[in-house]
Amino acid sequence: MTQQPEQADPLVFQRHRSLLFSVAYRILGSAADAEDAVQDAWIKWSAADRSQVADPRAYLARIVSNLALERLRSTRNKRETYVGPWLPEPILTGAENAGGIGSTGNTGNAWSAATADAADTVVNAESVSMAMLVVLETLSPLERAVFVLKEVFGFSHAEIAETVERSEAAVRQAAHRAREHVRAGRPRFPADRSRQREVTERFLAAATGGDVNALMELLSPDVTLWTDGGGKVRQALRPVVGAQTVAAWFAAIGTVSYQGVEPTDMHAELVEINGAPGLLFSAPGRPVATVTFDFDADGSITAVHNVANPDKLRAVAEGTTHDVRVR
Image (tube, rainbow, N blue to C red; front, side, top):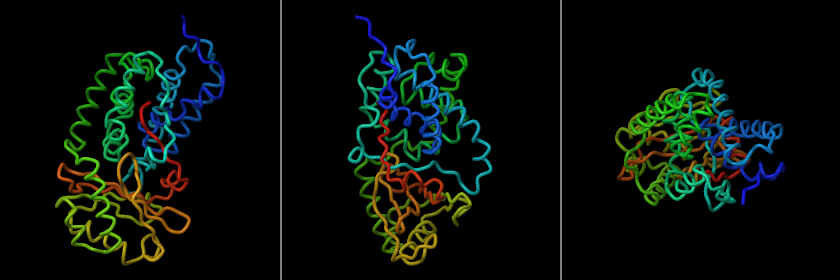
């Protein structure tokens, strides 16, 4: 029996909305821009001749990929003139708080098979981690889109070529360059998740207690702290390097005011951010900063990403938990 296309129903789009956000967010590194891309995809979907669409899920994914790529190109100049380091916009994740976003039935094509396989591996958390998004930021827009579509969501080279309006040969070359760059830039043997959570909990206790020595024990000697205030709040405009300096930075949080918030008014908690344990610092009624970590194989912290730009904390402030699985 021939499978009938889904009917022109808003529920069809809603069923795949979380998948579309997952694609757009990985390409853009911004929750706000990803939501805009999803909204634009809805407009295009509403105007499309859906009687000709046999697979709405794949069709919508291609639409939002192209929209995200266009948006990434248009925002590239803004990121190049950004005040201080530019870090991805953090999102809250975690299956315990999410509603199974993006997990839809098998449509019987290569897209579905690839994403079903990927969903059972750690690629989901890794592909949305701060470490990965930071590496992806160093790619060209085309390389980034191709990497996300191929390595995370299982698009074929031919499907990607159609989406990005390039030849299949050009897409293969971009995929190869992106893989090599990502392989060189991301941690090769990160600590397991239980070790990451343990170290994050110890870091939280040491930072809120102002314990420099305890922090030093958790940090790699050449650890690097990246702080993103975007010129909106006071942060370091250059990377802070070295265990002693980074430990002193965070130990001060428990003893002096931070972003105008007194220590007695600061609340710190362990949450899941971008698929990994992280820290959320809050003042009454608003988030102040998120902190995420890169680890080596032994569980030592090799990099710290501190996002304090209030414009980038809107998704966290809304309290929305995103399930960024690939299906």
